[in-house]
Image 1 (cartoon, one colour):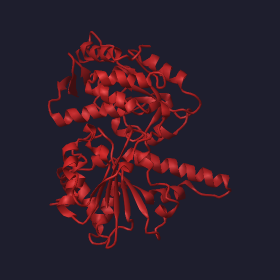
Image 2 (tube, rainbow, N blue to C red):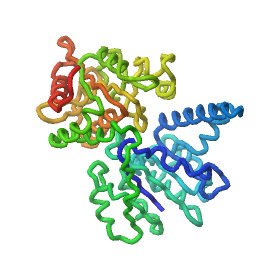
Image 3 (cartoon, rainbow, N blue to C red):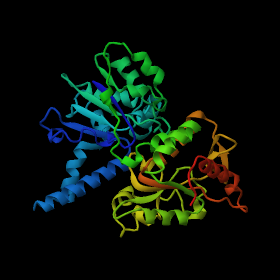
Image 4 (spheres, helix red, strand yellow):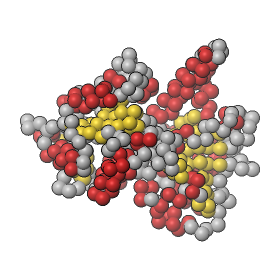
Length: 423
């Protein structure tokens, strides 16, 4: 059975299924499960966070557990999808020990071309002819009795080349596994999921079940952030009525402000955060002209230290010296976020324009697929905060043609025109 689960941002999709007593982590139980993600930073952070928590809880109960022991137990249940795939490739007939596979951000699974390219380049496997959804289903299909694949679906989250989208999961079932049932959230027809026509086609077919319970509609992120994703969607879609409606719902509960001064933004974050509430800087991976502001997206960081360490560690987000991009922050959250907006995604003449910095100048992005990825990158960045956010749109520089004021002023004026107050 394939279950495709949707949810509002912060609805706890990442941790769905983790609390089925202890049976999901017991290899002798038929409910033994695996949580899979292709998001390397997310997997590393979950491993470390849960291992630290286990060590601390055991210490309080006067049980001595090393972090290595705790981490090993976590790694059995939370795996990088590539590790799971490699294990299944070793014996192509043997079913995996798990009967249940939970696949996070299922719409980001690779299409056939990306899978085949990776297998040829990295694994020396020539002629691989399955998309990632089809291969993962085939692994669970080896069980002679039953198996379940739970796909957790986020709308508008595709941010990289070769991501198949949710439609490929449906096509894989229809193409190769006619005996499988598909249970779907009816919310998959929403435009953000990019599968509306395909989902409509499935209505009334045998083996297809639409279930409202497969949409996680209650946000666990924060009562303040409940309507933020809708506001961001309207903002990016240039939906003036939606912007006004959702801004009215969030402005009193979820502070959003804009500034041209990054130092002022940092100070705002520090004054807003209380106690251990986490804050930090997030930027687009294409934001390559922020270096004059001491932000270099190409500088490597360790997301484990950035997300988990405290105020005393210079590698943590609190120092606001290192930044994370959409690839490192996707699936993760901060209490307070500072989004630094570069000239890669600009408001120009009543529309968004898309740019990539190549060599010594900005170049227009014309390919529709890449434009979608870039728009989704900013969707990810603008929906990472639980409590509130500050947006920095830097001033241009008259002596630097790569930071022309026109690259920034339009975006700043658009945000102000949408009601975002200036600090």
